[in-house]
Image (cartoon, rainbow, N blue to C red; front, side, top):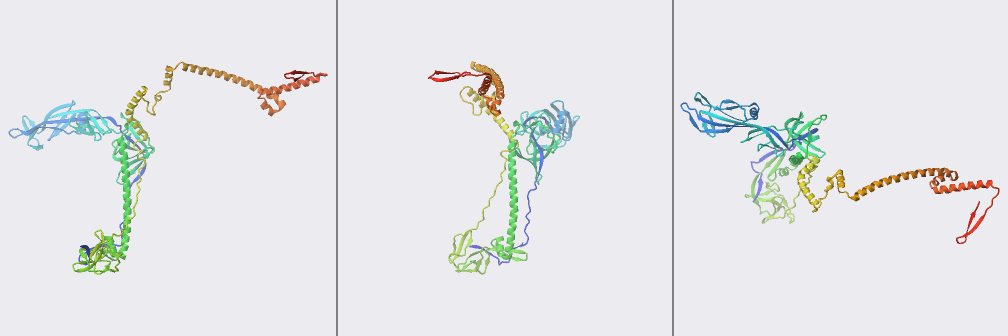
Amino acid sequence: MLIAYDCNQSRLNLTSISLVTTPSCLDESRNVTVTKERVTITQTTLFRTVKYRRCLITAHNSAFRCGKVIDTAHQNSIFSDIVQVSEEECNDIIHKGRYRYSLGGNTVDITINHQFTMTAFVSRGYIRQGSCEPGTPFTRDGVFYDRPVVNTELHIRYSEGEGLVDLEENVVRIEGKSCNFQSGKCFDADLGYVFWEIPKPDCSGEDPKSLIYEGNAELVLEGNGNRYIQVTHSGYDFQILIRNETLYLCGILTWHTEHPRLYVTFLNKDQPSLNLRYPVKSQEVSMLNYINSKIVYSFRHVRESVINLFNTFKQDRCKTHNRITENLMTLATTSPKEFAYAYGGPGYTATTRGEVVYLAQCNPVLVSPDLSRVDCYSEMPVKIGNRSMFMAPRSRILIPVGTKLECLPDMMPKYNIDGKWYHTTTHGLMQSPSPRTISPESIDYEFEPLTGISEGGLYSSEIIEKYQKAVVAPAVQDVITARVVASVSGDSKLPEGYSFAIGFDKSDFTIIEEKVGSFWTQWSTKLKDSGSWFGAVLLGFALYRSLICMISCFVNFRALRQDVGFLLAIPLCLVDAVASLVLHGRLLADRTAKNGGSEVGKHDESINLMEMGERPITRRLK
């Protein structure tokens, strides 16, 4: 059996659809305002002391029934309570020494002189001259107290002191008990009601305050009223949510943040810096805040990216839907039945009237294939009851007439029934191979990474490095001590990068040299001193010889300039032997000329001597 749709019935679901209007695609992007601000981010210290006040008041009660004739005891007549104490009442007990107790209409003012005070009175009803007057009835633990008179013994204990605050764990330890520090108060069965003031960073005081960052930041204001401080500068990379709770730091309005230890102060451009005494140190680094700031920053970045992606997708989807709607409107004017199938699916038909199209939903009916027809039709021949009808393709609407086709074995009309494909034969429906399905193209996307989050953070890289050294130092110190002992004893060497010489200065080396210096060390020192003096003597002699050479050169130059000229006199004057030879020849010539002019005659006498292999030597005598 097959399901078809019969539109020839009196009752049809009819819907009118506009052919000229489409929905508006509104831009729903977030209203975010970003401004540049000058801020200071501070934190309280990791460990500190805080002054606390505690008050414990216990009421021990005894109740009886004040009868008109005789007094009787109530059931559960003895009971005790811990009286709730407010911070103001505890301050009055400690500093003013007074407490007002009210119960059942009776009010008693109690004077407190010691840290433990005990007093008794009638807290409900009255007793006068041996007679009683009942107080207001009450119910306690399911027991109704009628015409009660209650005698109360009040024990009041109080004390003051200092508790140790562990800001890393956000707890305050008071007399061995731990309480949530940020609440400012707590209750303990042994201590009673405990109160303390949450310290805020300021410019003075006994406790040092830490400065994390001071400089420019971005103030991000969202449309829902949330405000964020975002810093991406010089090794800092974090984001903090500002709460609406405020305080005054150095007389300047300061805001609490989502981290219980961090505060943000906005400064004007001309305003001086906060007079905080200490910057943040490695011991005060809160790794919880450091990691949380990274996680929160990453989460908000991903959230913002997803919201932007969703808004973009929603805007694009609206525009795409409008384009599809406009195409459907055009299709409705040209082919209403195709519009009906595209809009509603099988079982829908439509008709156009003016600027609207009327969409009708036909009623489903059961049909069976008509095996009596042997011809090929575009529509499937079916039977509904005793009637022969045709089931239109796609819309599955029953029509009385079919479109006859030429029967071709390779191009038989096929129909999709329950996800499988069939064609009609004289024996019924026969399954056929599935045709190809048109598939859309795949889409790609790109995720923008958050840069700088692995390096930057709430604290600078220098502070983190110091923090790491401070954390690792105790463990490394024990290892290095063992290695030094082993190295001195000769069992092993120091690790690479470590040396004994790093721990010594120049004065230490001098002392070591004096203690362990040998004879040769002392002798080498004396030789160095003697060499220094000998060098000084050589330097003096060299200076003396240089002066003599300069004088000799000057004299030679003046004498040679007359014989050889100015240019040759310069190089010749530097060589003392050449200069002497030239000057000696000139003097000899002058003497010869002088002797030749004064004598009348002269004779030469040559003496030939045979020496050294009979070689003649001639000597000229003048």
